[in-house]
Length: 321
Ligand SMILES: [Zn+2]
Image 1 (cartoon, helix red, strand yellow):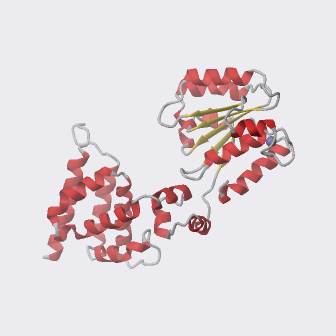
Image 2 (spheres, helix red, strand yellow):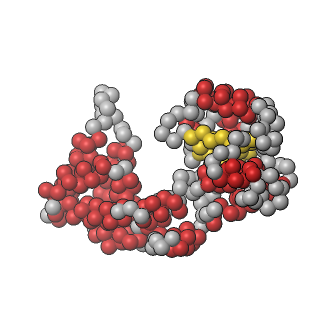
Image 3 (cartoon, helix red, strand yellow):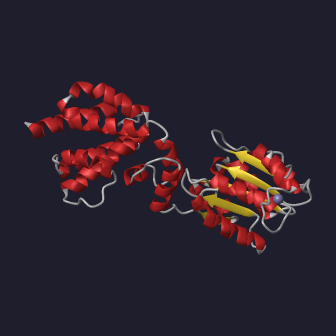
């Protein structure tokens, strides 16, 4: 299990031992924290036939779980699709039956926010009238999307972000060298940082931001930059951070930049002055939010991005002239 999950796991384990664990749990926290790993480990602990040292990894229940064959363990995932009412109804039926191994029954609902309203209403009954030793673990990074009635019937476990130092140490143990900029770009999420560092994303970020800063001097590269931005939604965040950092520097605040590793670039941009930078940030935010054109026509994102970049070039030229 990931080191930052150990303290919450211990708290859950204590509640289980004291018989205080609710039969409906809601695990929330940002993406890339390993919520599913934690839920799965808790499920193993609940199902293990040994009260002490659970999960023991040796009993029949632990072996079945490892092989993915435990008859009283149920996993539903809303990844990529909605969780419909029929799925919830059949889960409720299974949970109402007695446990095959005579112990507890555990169901994990990953991406629980993907339940349709009918599915959520069907789940309410199961949460209200649990049969036997059933434990339902709902997992989501968007708890606000769940019906308030679902949330209020669950014991809520909101997982806080691990400390930056812990994430950096863990990444180093995986052979990955990170910095605070990489943490900020990935919202401090350790698994997102790992995936980011295992991909080409960091090189892409640095080269995209360099191209953006150089754009007024090389306007012919606009189409290339435009497609690079449109290809990956995360590039909007990179641009935001760069512009915000530039604004900070323009205002004489240089202590805490989102992307310390791009300080030279944001320093260069800060020459544009606070007014221009703020206008650029506002424009970018409007684009990102998908503001519709007057008359209700849907936003042509590519066109508007092109306009935004053109404005950026023109204003830069004025400044240079
Ligand atoms: Zn066991």
